[in-house]
Image (cartoon, rainbow, N blue to C red; front, side, top):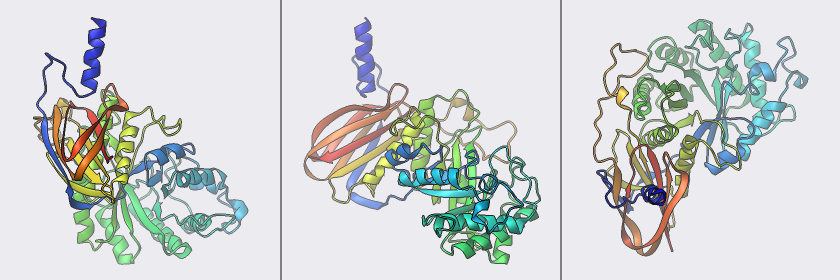
Length: 457
């Protein structure tokens, strides 16, 4: 009986239903590698872990790493500890820890998004001398982009001024205090490196209209300040809906465009599922992340940095399935020519596919996520800081029946990698099929992520 149980478990893991087992309804999916629908955008971003994250950044093909509010090394208070010191004197600055952190990001093949401010636990008070603070920020830019103080010429593009001034955790001043700091710092950064991208404010509550959203944009426009990117955060609190980020991004895009910021990048620089949902399994978080990323490819999000989980060392292999789902998404960079797919939806079963420029490699990423039933009803009291929950119904999402049209005839090797409750980026199986049309079928009940790699032999 024990051996029979092991056999059943192996067959299910491979996507094959054993005799007598109930097959769940499968989604009909088509992929046509002969029809191009666009090009893959660089959208593989994460929050920095620490100076040990290099291997993971490289293995996950990460392109953007935000230095977050918990890193401490990159805080202005850490870099310029004595506020009475001379801002022009290189000896006033302590760059060592931040140099190491930035080097780890660049060594991993990514670029940093540098957040100028303090970390969680730092005093949220506005700088008492905003002009001096702005000049400190300018010298940080000079150190990393112009070589000042035995520095570097990294060409770091993204410079975010402060973080979440709409949250009392990070800002105790008035909106006008923040406007003044933004103006002085934006002009200082521009004078240090005219090619730098200046942005903010890193909204914690992007759905709330008012002083840190519309009025901030109006101030920037009137003062003719740069707003190269508009940064915001969101955790899918009390919904765990992977489409929520695209919905919010569309609202912000409309607001930015209406105020003359059509070229301003829309940057979601911190996000994840509900951090307070202790009942959410790790495989579910992985599918949530993958479905969210696939949806973002079709939405007005120009860059994102996912709040990645811990344990992403050991040569870049992660114990966190969610981190590995980002690796599966990053693998699409080997097939940057996006091709036509049909059969996915916007409720959680997300599909994206691409082919290599030489037509010898096709990859399909399928993420099957289902919002927990506790979130599939309207809230009793609608919190205006959160979007309304969607009414969703699920059907035919127990697996997939995929027909794939390949670039040409011949033999193709098919490999399937999976993340679910029992597999963490495991190679399930491999086979050889004859093109140009092949069929792949598997049970894939939610939550699960599958990367299908099809290569010409």
